[in-house]
Length: 289
Image 1 (cartoon, rainbow, N blue to C red):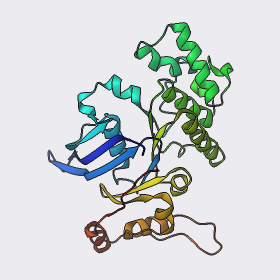
Image 2: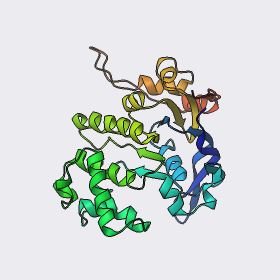
Image 3: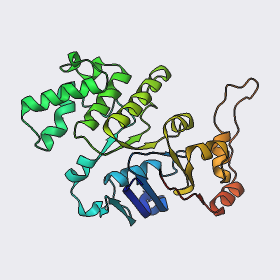
Image 4: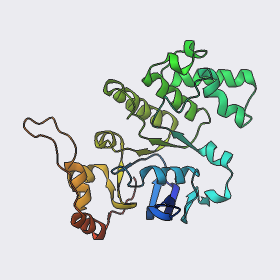
C-alpha cells in the first residue's frame, strides 16, 4: 500500500483583518482540516473563492504557519525541517506564469536558480540540467537565453514547471496551474503534468475551482467550504454521486453546453449557508491500491 508522504492533521488558521477604525478581527480561513496525501496519487482540492484552498496549499508547503495543528512530511513535522529541506521535497507551480517568473532573468537562469540556491553542481552542470529540464517539458533549448516576455503563456507555464522539477521533488502543489492560460493551451499543460507524473513518480496536489480540470486529473477530491473539508472521496464518486449538499450545489453551478440549459443559479441564502455549515462532512475512508 502506498505510504502517506504528506499528513495534514487538524489544521486551523486565522488571519488578522482590519475592522473599522483601528479595529482588528480574526478571519477563520481553515477550521480543523485533516488530509492525508499518499505517494503517487493526485489529490484535487476544490471549492469557491475564499473556501481555504490556497491557504491549505501554502501551509503544506511551509509558507504559512498554521494557528493550530500539524503537517508531517514523511512522518516528520515540517516545523522541524528547514525551508531548503522542504523545498527539495515539495515544489509549487503558481497560478500566473506572468507573475511567477522574474522578467529581468533569462529562462536558463530562472530554471537553474534553485540549483544555485541549494549549491548543487557547478555553473556548467546547472546550465546543462536547465537545458535538460526544458526538453522534459517540451521546450526547445533555443529559448535558454530568451526572457519571459518573449514567450507565450503556455511556454511560460512550462518554464515554471521545469523550474519546479529541477530539484527532483517528490510532490508538486499546483495552484490553479491553467486558469491564466487560453483554453486551447490548458489541455496541453494538463497532459504534460500527467506524463511527468508517470515519468518521475510524482505526487500532485491540484488546487482549482475548475471542476472539469479536477475531474480529468484527480484520483481523489477534497471539497472545501468555509474553511472545512465537507466531502472527501475518490473522483468518480464525487462527480457521479456526491453526498454533501454543498458538493451537489458546486457541481450544479458548473456551466454546461446542453441546449437550453441557461446559466446556473447558485445563490446561497443565509439560511442555506447555515444549513450547509451544520451538515456533517462526508469523509470516505480510502485505501490506495
